[in-house]
Length: 80
Image 1 (cartoon, rainbow, N blue to C red):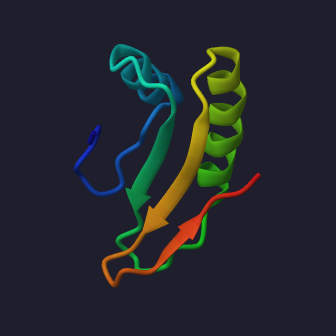
Image 2 (tube, helix red, strand yellow; image 1 turned 90 degrees about the horizontal axis):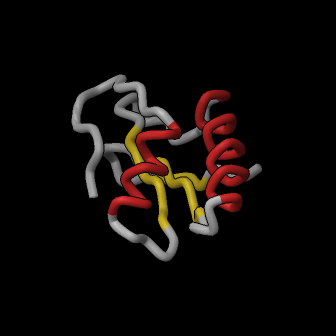
């Protein structure tokens, strides 16, 4: 599923969770790009990961991973 397709788009936690629930997902992965080419998670990435893990657990829809990709194919997983 793709929620946003524009650079520097702000994604809200409630949008991610609502989409997972609307799709009756058993679990989900969040992936997005960093057009800069640097896959290093930002503070916002880390904060979103923590919030998604907490709220997804409360909703019983496991949040499996948050992955950042770059145009060159580099990637990073965001950890708590």
